[in-house]
Image 1 (spheres, rainbow, N blue to C red):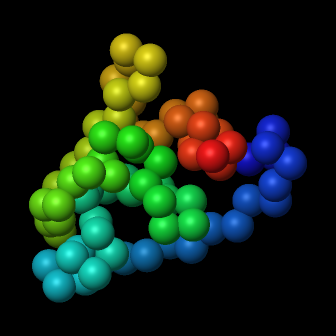
Image 2 (cartoon, one colour; image 1 turned 180 degrees about the horizontal axis):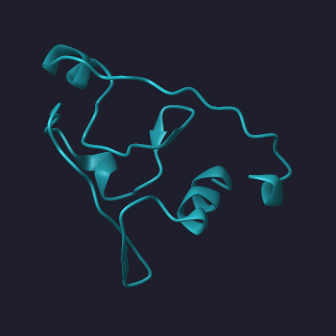
Length: 78
């Protein structure tokens, strides 16, 4: 985030129920949002929220178990 000229601020949220998963639009762990927008463009269209899901991230043809920095920077720059 320093590359974007921002001071990183974050909040860790423990999602404990299916109701919270729906409220947070939680599509699996780990989930990273910027101003409420999921950093994964594919996940932004998801309408299925679950407490017990793991996520993978695909960026530029590679698969990750976390959102890559480039994906987060693309979201910040929008």
